[in-house]
Image 1 (cartoon, helix red, strand yellow):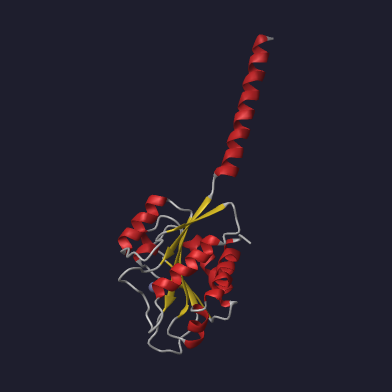
Image 2 (image 1 turned 90 degrees about the vertical axis):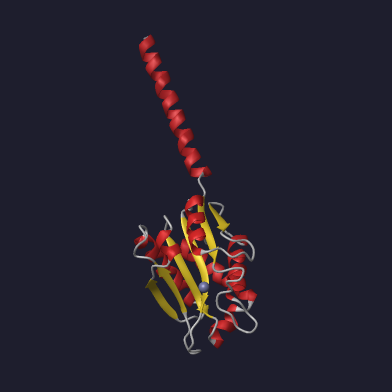
Amino acid sequence: MKKIIGIFCLLITTVTFAQTNNADSIFTHKYTIILDAGHGGDDTGVKTDEFQEKDIVLNIANVIKNNNPSSKVNFVMLRNGDEQIINTQRANKINELKPDLVLSLHVNYNIKETVEGTETHVSPMNAFYDKAKELAEKISSNISSLGFKNLGVIDTNSKVLRDSKTPTVMIEIGYLTNDKDRTYLINQKNYINIANQIYKALGLN
Ligand SMILES: [Zn+2]
């Protein structure tokens, strides 16, 4: 009988422990997404007379972080201010933080002012290429619903995309060199719409 009670107690303890563990994994694991606002400091990115890519993408990243609709996700900024980070440091910082996902934010440039649209980039050399590509397709399509031409997903082996040990998507939201895209991108009231389309692609709203 003692033996049976002993086994019963052991069983109770095991079940309780398993439940506690389970609850912990559901309620304490937050999905971490790094928002990598491109460029910074002396590296302005695309520049027009009045506007610089580094400022636009930092503002958009802040709107994404500040309006996060999900308590399950933690957005972390790779740069918070106007500091320059070389791409090797970006990749190293990402790998130190071990996020679940990285979104690099950029706006595009073309010598031809007629070139317009939104596109996403992923690296075939990244181990999480398939996952990143699936999300990249959703993001391009969702952002294009705001009035951008959908240029789709492009394979690129840039350092950050290639060296991140996590799914990584670079978003070129639109062309700062195109009148239509620029009008949208310089109006800060539109940033919440961009954020909402990204949340939607991530399944957060
Ligand atoms: Zn850029």
